[in-house]
Image (cartoon, rainbow, N blue to C red; front, side, top):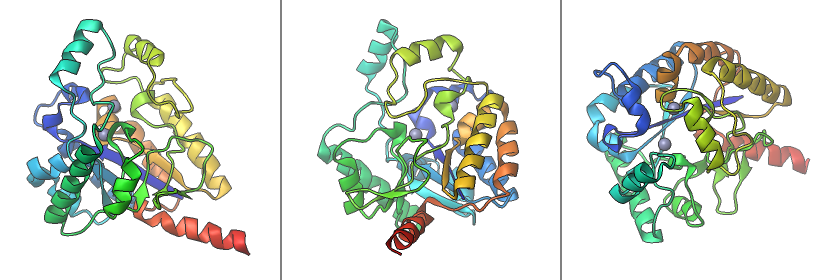
Length: 288
Ligand SMILES: [Zn+2]
Ligand SMILES: [Zn+2]
């Protein structure tokens, strides 16, 4: 079983990678619309985690995704942890890695406000409450899951672990389905991720739970994904794959993605909001 996921960000966040889209008529949201259509062509369900500001600022562009029958929409913070001007200047002056988001949510109150704002705009635009979430940049702290659970979120996918083939129940009551397949952005040479950038990033690696710091060409990455997905299918587990629309487009204009979709179409695909059934089923099986 496969849970295909992607994250979508607003243009005004100005993440590094958006600058690598040569066709200026394309935005990350428009690329995501094409991504959703491609998934639907292969009859594959996907969960797209979107920032609230995308729904607020680019709703007309986003509408086709909201109306797509095979797409579940999840939350990805409202604002996308924008960095302060001071930290951008510091990165430029110090030669540090210029990551595109802040490494902290700030205070409990500010994080809570951001979550509430995300859920409010989703309800206004989509007419329903979100139940699935991924933290932008996977940045979460000791408050995040409690805040999310209290706000009605039930499913989270922040964990990076290749040794967890099944979703699990967290102490806060959320169901976590770990990304157990090599994630895309931080393991593919593309956009600003040149060999020099990657060498520097390896020294300052922020994803402490990530099983690898290595990067690959998009084609090699696709081969690793294939092997890992097949191995999880053989165990009867759930493969949670992260393929960002923007990365898939910038790296090779969806070529590798389409190969992977052909593979995924041989298996059952589910949304993040369906992962709870797997936890219940395993609990039942273990009690027997
Ligand atoms: Zn993100
Ligand atoms: Zn990327």
